[in-house]
Amino acid sequence: MDVSGTIDAILGQKGSEIFSVSPDATVFEAIELMANKNVGALLVLGDGRLLGMISERDYTRKVMLRGKRSRETQVREIMSSDLTIVTSREPVENCLRMMTDKRIRHLPVVDGETLRGVISIGDLVKWVIASQSAAIAHLESYIAGGYSG
Image 1 (cartoon, rainbow, N blue to C red):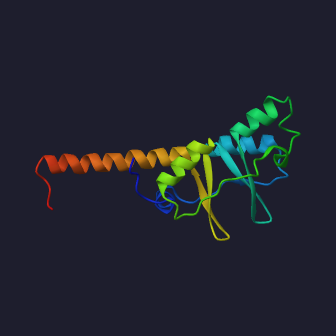
Image 2: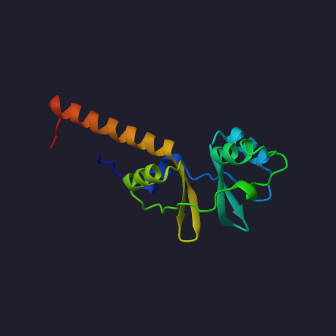
Image 3: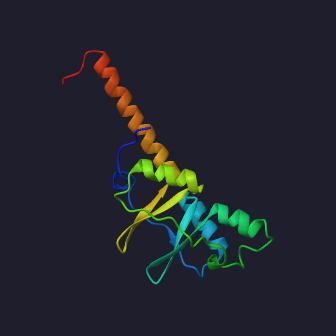
C-alpha cells in the first residue's frame, strides 16, 4: 500500500493540541478528562517532560480488572512509560506498520526536545481514506478525459 505523507502533514490538519495529565492526578481525573475531550489517551507530563501515557486500555487492564479504585489510584501507578515515539518527519506508512506490529493506538510526536502532539490510529485511518479518495478522484477525472497532463 502506498500511503504518502508524513506525520507533520497530519498534525497540520489535525492541529497539535495536547491533552495531558500529571502523574500525581488520580485515574478518575484522567478518565474524566478523556471523556470531556473525547480522546482515548492522555500524555503524562511532569516538569515539562514526557513521562508516559495513560489510555482507556491502561484503565481497564490495570484498574478495573485488578479491583483498584480510580479515585484513589494515581496515574503514575498505571501509566505506560515504555513509549514508542515518532518525529514529525516519520512517514505515515511507517507509523501504520509500527502501530500494527506493536499493537498500540497512540504515538507521541517529538521533535528534538519539543512535544508536537499525539497521533492516533484513527488519525492515520482518516489520512489513508482521504489519500485514497483523492487518488480515486484523480483517476476518475483522467478516465473521463479530464487529464491536463
